[in-house]
Length: 149
Image 1 (cartoon, helix red, strand yellow):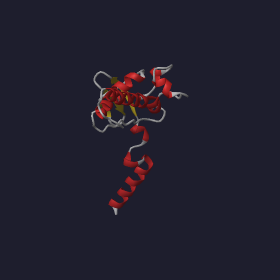
Image 2 (image 1 turned 90 degrees about the horizontal axis):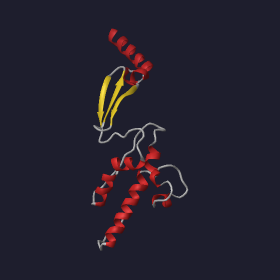
Image 3 (image 1 turned 30 degrees about the vertical axis):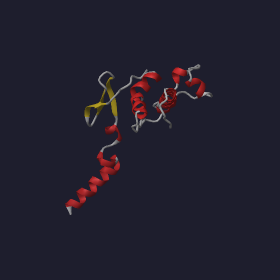
Image 4 (image 1 turned 180 degrees about the horizontal axis):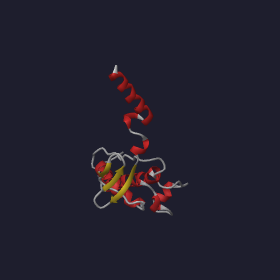
């Protein structure tokens, strides 16, 4: 009877709005404020209101490759060198700069760039991490400490 009609009406409304009964416009959010010093981003969404998200690090839009590496991966590399597993996860919208941050701009000779050649400030997190690991292994071997990868 009436319960079935209401349930069907609710299903039809959910199909129109998308899963969960909210349409896309209700789900859109905007950045209200970014506080890199405190690791916070404040977002505003019409149907939800203002929410604060806390992170280990919030990098400003004009962050450099070295500052990105130091904030996001240097500690993981240090832990790795001391025998712990490590992982850096990169997540974000398409076109937001994940690949650029992780690898740097495309270039023909990454090896020369990593070793301090032209463009070395632009290499990303992955080449910096690899270089730090290889240098640490080399340094330990020089001091007579047996280690390998």
